[in-house]
Image (tube, rainbow, N blue to C red; front, side):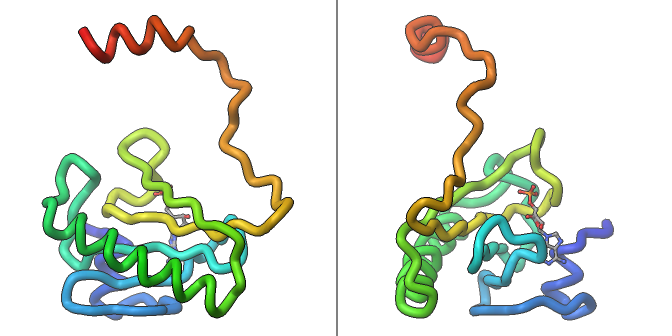
Length: 128
Ligand code: AMP
């Protein structure tokens, strides 16, 4: 299987590595949404949230906390948005958590003007 993130982990492709341990690598996103945009990727290949195990997932969250502190200390960020795509919208099919630094007045917004059903209808579908 040819996976770009597995190739990065193997060292076949270079990356700007911020941190690594036995379980994860944290690297700069090659096409950043904002200054300091990083990705936390597990060294073992998991496709998505369905696939990954809880132990690895909780380690990723621990590392995210450390990176938040690092970004605050080094880049003086005002906030941090975590995002993680699964299946549709997921370009690289190797689990990764985006750490997207926020800066006051940066105007980064998730699109909110796309068509949506009313909350009650959706809530009832979820709770049924
Ligand atoms: P997603 O759409 O959630 O799968 O996001 C994939 C992310 O991986 C994108 O933000 C890309 O910019 C990033 N990316 C792709 N190739 C590389 C690479 N070689 N090094 C660092 N980031 C990469």
